[in-house]
Amino acid sequence: MYPIRYCLLLLCWLLPIGALSADEAKPPLRFMTADVWPWGYIDEYGQPAGLLSRLANRLSELSDLPLDNRVLPHQRLVHELRLHRADFAVLFENPTLDSFASSLGVVIQADILLVTRPSNSLKLNLEGLSGRKVAYIRGTYYGESFTADQHIIKVPVHNLDQAVEMLLMGRIDALISSDLVLHHTLEALGMTTGQFRIAVHAPGHPGHLYMSDQPSYPEQAQAMQSALEELRLSGELQEIFWQQPQPLPD
Image 1 (tube, rainbow, N blue to C red):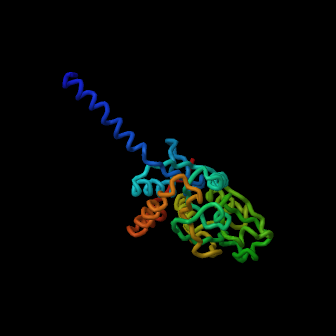
Image 2: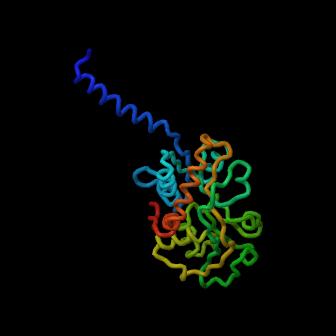
Image 3: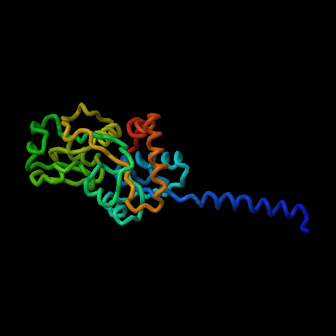
């Protein structure tokens, strides 16, 4: 027989190991966030940050599942989802996604806006901007009419603050943006919508929580839907996107 003190010591060693094994047994949420401010970016500590990273963290907490969140360029994110190398992402509704992903619910509905300087008398629609330079965030889907238009000169940018600067300098004629990204960008720049001419290009464009059609853990779908609905009913979903200001990246 071993002395009691050795038995107690062995028990102390085994308990944490058992607890750790139980936690590790929970499959992680294989999430991806587009590297587009304010949706997602890597902060000064090397950690995922931004609006969708906050959402991913809350979905993880409410579903009681560990989170594996990767911040990737938009086009690579879609490529990874198509190849089933990740399971979840929040993206604006896009017909091309339907062949390899399905929606677990609408996360946000955003108005797509066309924006120009007050002094610019151009009509703020695609016809009025024919032959003009219009900046857009690379990889973002703004609806089929913008995607198919061959008459405007599309100028890709990484973040909207770059487009706002180009607009004020007269290097472009207009920009296209969701109302949410415009809101956070102007707030971070200390500006207001009253300093621009703005027209709605497409109202209520939905952004969905998408899941790969070949998920690693199909049972996670219900947990994610329940967590998303809880955030919606509590009002926290609205707060995450509209009431939490984002610092501009360095």
